[in-house]
Structures are given as structure tokens and as C-alpha cells.
Length: 131
Image (cartoon, rainbow, N blue to C red; front, side, top):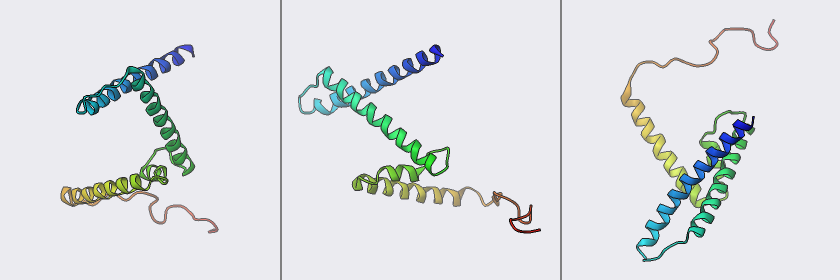
């Protein structure tokens, strides 16, 4: 059990280190144009803020999915998460529409083979109330 906790803590530290590096690169690139610099304390604080936001977001998405009776997170959960940020919701909705349109074009061009229907075959089993 302690080994599992140690591995999880090590994995979390590696994730935070990778995030710290990425945020540092981004901040340096953004400030380089203005001839400014950021302290390591600033980058560390920003990393903690971003990591906490990612953790909260992932918990919310898992909760939304579980509440809907699903084991996997889908776009409905993401859109629900953006409900208080109209600008972000608009951007994500436009991107989702673009992806669905591209997916629709791809499906029409790929094949014309009939797809297998999912679910219960007609007439299989008895319904409620039938004898």
C-alpha cells in the first residue's frame, strides 16, 4: 500500500515538474517580446494555481459523468462545465460544430457498407406486462 502511495506521489511530482517547465517556457516566451522576466516564485505560484484548477476541473467532469450514469466523460460534461463562462462556451460550441461537420464529411466519403445496428434485435425476449 505504501508503495502505491509512493508511486502516486512520485507521478504527481513528475506531472507538476512537467507543468512547471511548460508554464516557464510559455511565460518566458510571452515576456521576452516585452523585455521582461518572471521570477521562479511567480512561475511556481502560477504552476500551483494551474495544477489546482486542473484537479478541480477533472473532479467536476468525473462528477458530471457519474451523475449522468456514464463511466466516460463526454462533450456534454465539458459544455456543462463551461456554463458560467459564455465566451468559452461559445468558442467550444463553435469548435464542436466544426468537428461534427468534419466528421460528417469524413463518414460520407469513407464507405457505403451498411453499419451493424446496436441494441436488442426486434422480437427478442418478452417486454413488461406481456405473458
